[in-house]
Image (cartoon, rainbow, N blue to C red; front, side, top):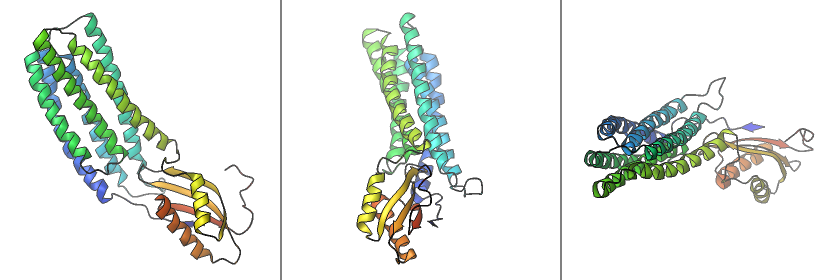
Length: 301
């Protein structure tokens, strides 16, 4: 049996992502206070909802940033794979938070339909416009790198939801200024909340799949078996294949390989590892070589 013991800490991509998250967190937290004050002064639910969502963004960004810091810690005896999975846990929490925020917005908006509130559309428009600019800057900071992992994408989706909230607040302010129809404020808040639900569902589904040790979507276990045997003729059979992920960027694999007799053990082992990395992007694999029947053939896979 051969086990590649290389455990990576912060990669250059992770370091860049961490820096972007920290800047986005500070910018979001600062403007959140201004938007909260503006929502209270104008009486706008859309602004208050956006401020609440921006607070959620601040917490989400802080959690995502902390995930990179924790994820860089070295493996220990209790956590032999290190703390990489904390990033996925942060993304899962962020996704759940998006869904909770959306429910709060919808509930509050429905009460506004029953009891309409007067809204100061002028201040609402100014603050919502500034909020849109801030959200665009933060969203650009989080997505400019193009290699964002699930943790960073979860944070970016939080900001995207807030950006939609700013657009809803701007639209509601314009409608109120032109027509005086106060229900535009809760109505557009509900539309923004529906988009937030979709974003939250995507993050929860993807991160939940990783937390449940699901097979990465880009790796087919059947293809692992067939392509390894096709590329390495001395490999007669591949079985007990298990594939999961530490994070969405770090697939992990274990397998048993039955090989022909009188084949050099180390050469075949190296060929299997090279093939796994080149064909499937798996750089961390545990491979058990066998010359005869599998010793675990009567055990569950």
